[in-house]
Image 1 (cartoon, rainbow, N blue to C red):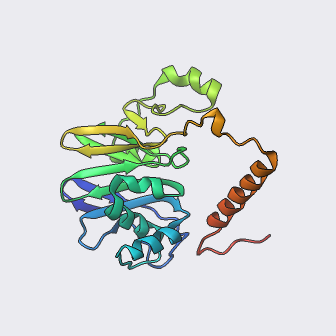
Image 2 (spheres, one colour; image 1 turned 30 degrees about the vertical axis):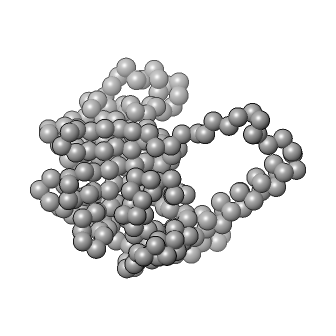
Image 3 (tube, one colour; image 1 turned 30 degrees about the horizontal axis):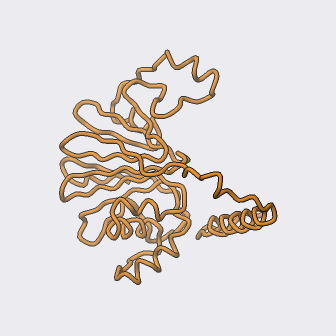
Length: 227
């Protein structure tokens, strides 16, 4: 689905339905249509976040994790990213003041590519979507050696000229002043004195975190396939 939001912004989304099969269509808007969102990914802790947001006075029209993201952004702004447990590449379009925000997953599990070309800012989960707009295919042959060694092109570079890949833990702000990239997350620095040393405690904590991680990831409207 492609929707023209206004003269300056258009959003497109091809959905893989996992959560909220009936009412989770995208792009999704808030009530006054001042915020539009497309999501590639899944927020695993959306149930807990939804309960917190309802307690804070928010109402919901769907059961999707996408709407939870919109409400979280309304409540906490950019700080909402620290609340999410999941894998995601997002596009918020704040229509009123023409500021557009593009956060991306901490580890880059869901990629987000972008380019500025012909007085237009383009972005997409896959590079081929940028080519569909008309962006020229100009390979960067100087990266052949890097690719032959690493089997990938490290962000923020790609194999094509004019196309960048958003760095893990970073987000973009696009407005009349241009494009700005900032970091919102990095691995924490742990002092050696604060490191766990009790082996039994380490095993117990790892087991608890691991099982909770699996439990969160099992949330889905789509039945599991059995062989």
